[in-house]
Image 1 (cartoon, rainbow, N blue to C red):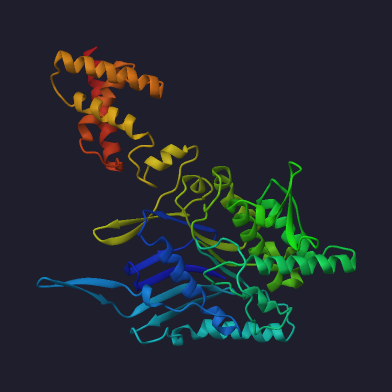
Image 2: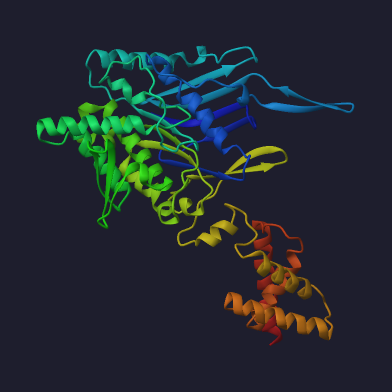
Length: 456
């Protein structure tokens, strides 16, 4: 299963937008309120069409908050009007067949229409029948991990599915909250089966390997009957209860285990190959949530290796996450003229984190502290002047000395001073430097360098 395109009409901040996806990772970055989470929510509605065909599994509808609102002015009165229809249209491939389906809401009182998703719904029903007939058909993983995931316990809910059903792999797959209880129960059950058979189950081996492959400092995970809790043993020799781990450890361990458990539950006949051979779609909001920078650098690559057939759609605010991206996988959302636009920019090999932050991806003016930035601006203001007083010359020298102490090197040569002068002239306003600014600076520096050589 794979989504190739998502068409959104009147969904949240999107009036009429087309978003394209790659088969592996799709990373969305952008300022707050540019629609990153909205894309994942829309995907959960679109992808959720397939679970409509599974008995006992809930699908996410188009909610009131998803309806785009427009502010209209009438004399001195401003009103906000809902825009209809709200359409989530998906184009993708299911079981090798190209499909197009819609989920639509046409009014405030209306429900989310499924008539234009009938083909996908029927496919879900056919999978259900094949499962009940005992056929070894591969079921795709579907899962959404929003920012509310903290992997704490929630109230146990009744399930209409029979214990042991393969379709339990879809239980709460699009839920807005995550529950460690299900993971703990699964681990406990498979530990008990392993004890009874005096051999680890294929599923337990596969899930355990997935967790330790993603978390290189975890040596072992097991269920402890004495504590009625998961116990995590680390490579440094320490052992901790899952509940005592930091949010970062709990988040990545439980999310990895949850994806792996769903894959092995949906496709038990694949045994220890279930995790690497199960396809599907996984949505993760803020992949960097609670993660240390060293994990942020590795997480994309690790998830890609452990779950090679799963299509990931993730959002992030962390530049380290982008270093694991491949060609065409980074999507930048920008609000331009009150309309969200999406651009793709690959990261050249070898780029530093500070260069990513100040480049097209995040657009920061600088990664320096505010006091140093103020000194740089004072220096630029002086350089913009054609003629300097003695006092200004002294102040310029004083600032350069301070900046050399802080930055190591600053305005040490005549060429560097000339470059700083060009930058000062071109960037008179404090704003993120655009690609046009950079090109203009390069051209001007080349011209002045040639002039200087000729004059010399």
